[in-house]
Image 1 (tube, one colour):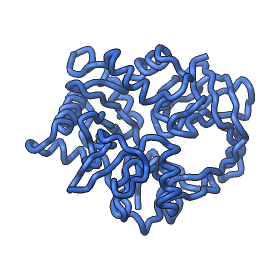
Image 2 (tube, helix red, strand yellow):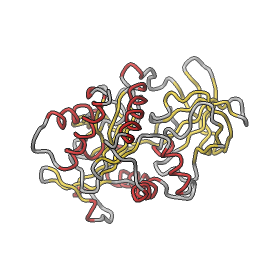
Image 3 (spheres, one colour):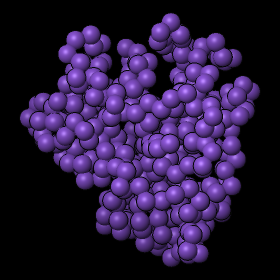
Length: 339
């Protein structure tokens, strides 16, 4: 059973989980709870957050803590203490998987459908065809999130996926060119404020800092007044690690300074920055599990970062340290900034 990030899993009960890693145990898949059938909901719900497909109502769970507590109360079998990563994870036993939904297949349906598309699907199709005009093949694209599940609302964004490191780089260059050619629009101040409120839940980044970092990434834009992200997923031949190849031990929280030596997978999940650390030469990388800090810094830049320090032991016995930013989706008091 092959899955990768941006795929979704539907369970036998109808819960939807977003796959959030490339490496999984043999008997289950790591994925984070995102959508819950309304009949299971035991918390207050904003009516605007209720979506419906095939007569069944769903609610999106955006907050990490709420998702963990819900599973604790209702579906404990989907919580799994992972000894390798040394953390409690959302994970679906393979016998509970009803189906796997993939972004490539869903985008292919949208692009090949010339009628009966809803408004958001039309915009997604337009975005795909514009990027294709700039040299990005349709087979290297996909769409994830609510559009993948057909649970989009009027306020939904487009979680657009580009597969492969080089193709994603070219996609960001294409987006820059599309802005210049007025084929697509960069975010206005109003949209940046929406993005900021969605992403930053404390004061680790000011609004001005957030916009400064985001504008230089060229992975966000507007198509017909709807916001989209250009998300990255590895092609299959770029996935070269298996579950258990590395083990991790929590060393507490730390703040470090250093210089970025390699940013090849800066837009991945986790985003990976190989670094020279000025505080501790054993710290070899900073990784981020939150989209906020993907593409945050580039080769040669000096950074300050705060997060969870981990000891990493790989299968060859080599030992080094890494700093993890984004231990929760909200990344409270965790960050990557230029020094």
